[in-house]
Image 1 (cartoon, rainbow, N blue to C red):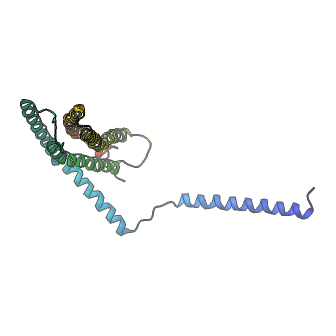
Image 2: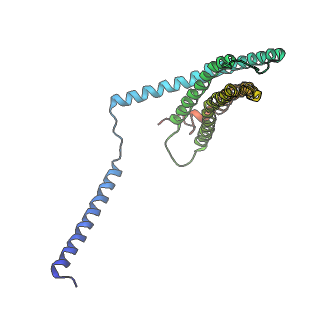
Image 3: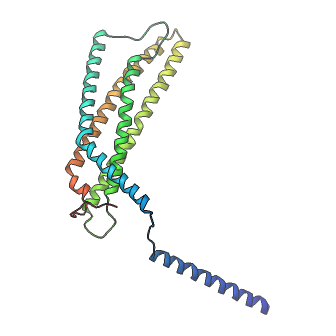
Length: 245
């Protein structure tokens, strides 16, 4: 059974808890009513300059850079096809004895391909950021243009995931080839390991060609989808001026 003092202490604690909850709710309501993001004018100018620079980058990408990249990749693929035909004529076989060195042809080719992978990744990031800055504030109705923007961003994300895997495949080639070379050097009487090294080189040559085909295809797809939906991407609400954050 509670004493009189204990009873009043419990009432006092309940009253304090009630006042604390009421104070917190009132504070939250005031914050929600005056929730205006305060940004210094100097910083606002910096953000706006970045935004304008981003728009110019995107314009240059679709006007000059992407068409040029498609042409360059097309030429590189033709060059690879010519080299492959020359190799087929020479009918190179796996080395049967002696030191197994790195495949200089593959290494030189990868030195040209890896920058292309990086360039595509940077293009994807720029285009994605550009579209994000064109998404208008959330409002009721007339969101068809925004839906198109979101669909394009979904596709760009899927492409980025696949492109990120290109470097993984390249690293895997060197790791697996290294293991095959180590076994071939240790077990010199087992010729299958030397043949395996040769097979790894041939397989990665085909993989590199597929990577280049994918990169060229991604550039072409990106150019096509933006060109066909440029009005909806840059002006999703159909306003007189493109919507921005």
